[in-house]
Length: 574
Ligand code: DGJ
Image (tube, rainbow, N blue to C red):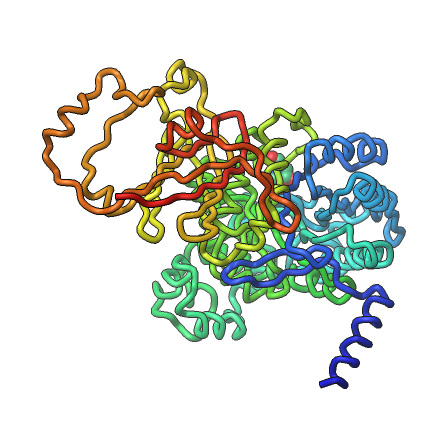
């Protein structure tokens, strides 16, 4: 025992001494996957720079202090292949070094985005010497033979050139940042996917398409049959779950089979880069996807990217990738995020359209999906005013981090998100029914009815113990009742701010004549306190929110425009 202890101590000292301690990594806690940074669970309160905002040192210098004022803890920054290797074989890391230096000065972590062979399907960030030499570095082709400005994933020369530059980048990060660990993750390529056609139709690609589906993938389908994505299972079943055959024999002859085939080859390509990264500097890796939205077909959207319905292809082809991450620019946020929080995929949103709603959306994903992080795109265009919803939201989430990370994966948190179409969510917990709503469902706030836009309201409901909760966020209201109480209380009358039955509603007398005999206990609010969360996760009292602020004990609420952390203690009475 003693010997073992001494050996582990020596090992720890050796690791620390050589600077090989891994500064960021992933770990499981219950059902959640957590990102550890400097040994502690970390929530990415991030932002991604616009594509051309890290292309000169002056811009990096100018932008980063603003990001710190906005309360970000992480910035996602492109690493441009064309600027890193402007001349073949000659590398320049000026922008990378400047990014890391500025990030450290502004207390930010960095995620580099490898804009290598592909960026939004295209190969626009490949250096000119690569683009011009299309004979050596061939393009993908459409089915009618049109070359695209998309490097072919089937070309070894493309891979070698891309991998050579990526290797140098990873080596440079390892040499300059292994000790400090400012760079916490790497995104490999950007929104990979075929456009104009669902797959590459170059000669090499066609050859691969007519060959058998690799045994590796056939075996994966068999061994993971019970947990395959429903769409993948359906596709495989459509041809009778064949154990062997070419792509069309196994999956049928349609555009979605072209997509599966193409995804396999993109994934295999990415896996080789991921192995490069792992062998040099072992930090978490992810790939991002443009969504298959608005009824479009593969090729109309970037076909074969790391999309939810292709997760099995990507998992089998690129097992060194930790996450498939959605870029969210379309409507239907709640639906999109649910598609990417899977039993085998933690949720990380590297890009989302920059809006003031992102503040409450961040609460939703941490509460509902144990997310790793969120990062609005073109973040430098956002407001750094302390009143901005995003700034307030990030500040509140930063404070909440020790609590949230303590409870992630333990099934005690829910995310709330409301808008004019989705105003209410009813939760049940223990013997309680908790009715959560948008703040503007309280009719006395004039903004609810005077035509003002309803900003999204959202937050986190965290259960600390029986009858004890944290409610945090903005623009929400929650009522707590015994489930048995709900069953006998009948339809509830809407009350005004003074607690009187609202104008136009039936009177209290009419409720009484319903003659439902009351039975059982009721749930009351013992107290609601606004609190601060300390770094060790303990709570400090700020003020009691009683009287008008909790509707004389009827509900718990956080107005639109404010972000708060409330500690709620319930009790029961008969
Ligand atoms: C998604 C891409 O990943 C980004 O680099 C950028 O092009 C945005 N789209 C623009 O909306």
